[in-house]
Length: 120
Image (cartoon, rainbow, N blue to C red; front, side, top):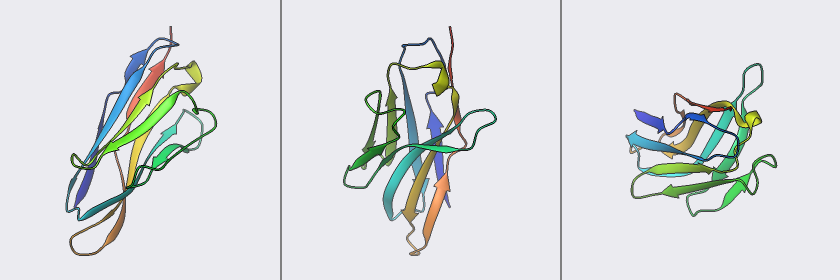
């Protein structure tokens, strides 16, 4: 079994910063691509940022220049540094990971989500 546990969400004023973390644990032989998604009330889940196992990153246009995704492979953890936050960034943020288990199963795993609220 593989688990993703997110932390770091909360309430922040417009223009502020937050850092989300997502730690993977369990039956993991290899941790491949990791990503952050978000879902605002009434909206579909959308991709925010991705990072490959060798550190190549990609971002949604709406967060380019403000958010930075990074990972620590030794800690099996992915981060999302969010700067210059706007009210429209308010959403539940989900961690996503593609893993290969020791039994050579390929899995796509989701975290439980962490709420980010940007409001004055």
